[in-house]
Image (cartoon, rainbow, N blue to C red):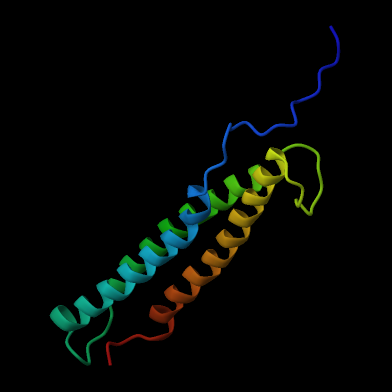
Length: 131
């Protein structure tokens, strides 16, 4: 049997831009839910000078779920970026290079979103009260 090489064209007929938006959307949802939960906790449960208490655990769990989602999106971006055997930069007008470029962009946005999510969660680590 003859040695066959893998096709150079990406697996999809047409690349979608949806994957590139997942990580920033997860970060934005995490940001909104974290601050909304803390504000409701401080307004309704703990009072103006009360401790954050249990809401810190809830934000920690939310952060863990968000980081897992961002990491999975980044991993998918890495797989798209490392498709085939071409090296960076991906600046040719071919379907394979567009596929790799979108994967690389997804990977970079995932890294940025990962760090941003950690910075949002650090607020409840260093601030222990509602005041």
